[in-house]
Length: 396
Image (tube, rainbow, N blue to C red; front, side, top):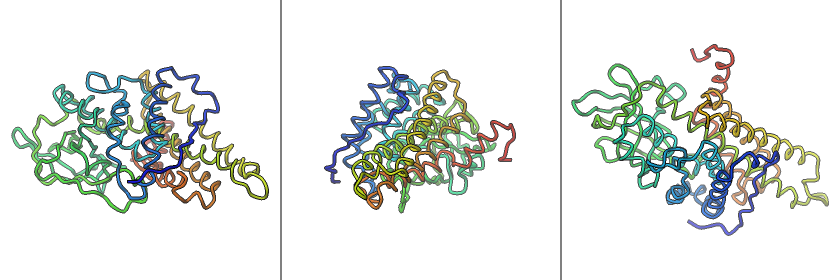
């Protein structure tokens, strides 16, 4: 896979001096990830995206940075960092590419987190250090071909079989599934209660075919999980959770990271557009001197600044264990939508050049279309906020 020779000139916008609200440790870790993205991600990401290949080799670098499970305890290989650090890491990874942030999000929030939170001590010791070091890769099986926004209607199921359970069903749109060594899968038991279990690659009857033909998140590998009478030891069941609250709490953790991450994509698009607006000459002056270009840039930086304040406050609440799922929904929905609009406006400022791989906007734009839908669709998050403020449930 060829490397790009162009220099990554990214300068992060910080219009309201929000860096002053961060600790020295926050800044050091964020800048370490920013430097790594410039060195390892930017030079290769357009080629990987164009060829729809996942740069799996980047997992090792992410592990060394502490980007896999950054807020989990160090005794299990996590970073022992606070929630703002976790957010900043996601912001910088998605500044590189949404697919790269997805790789880290899934490993940390959707695989390591449920094993840590709901697993036995034996499961934690067995899997977490290997996941943190990227020795093994994980995926998260909740969404099904017929049930996405309504996971409670899932049909994947387990039946008792002595010291094993028999797993049948299928999951769809699963990040990392074709390369995963383990899958944290949610299935209904014989009483119809949702349980979590760890399924390992190589178990008979378990396959993970890749989904092809995506126009979005092309540098992230996506697939299915198919279970045909898979015998899973009962020791692989997550002992400390039953019901939907298990997978939904994992999704809250991931959505929180996405709220920060999408902002990174928006910041990358804005930074590219600002620079281009000063260099591109039309009618004898830089296009940044025209009122309508300035309107676009002014609106972009305003929305980015609002988004930065939103996630900083959310991170502060998360550190105090006060951030509610509904508050996380608001930030995820707002920041992804904002990023999508900014990517589109930044593409306009670049004119025809904006659709080429010379600039990042079109790739971000296509990626963000997926981010708008996954981990709770744009509309569902709107209804979560609606239910939170009215106390009335629009889903029933």
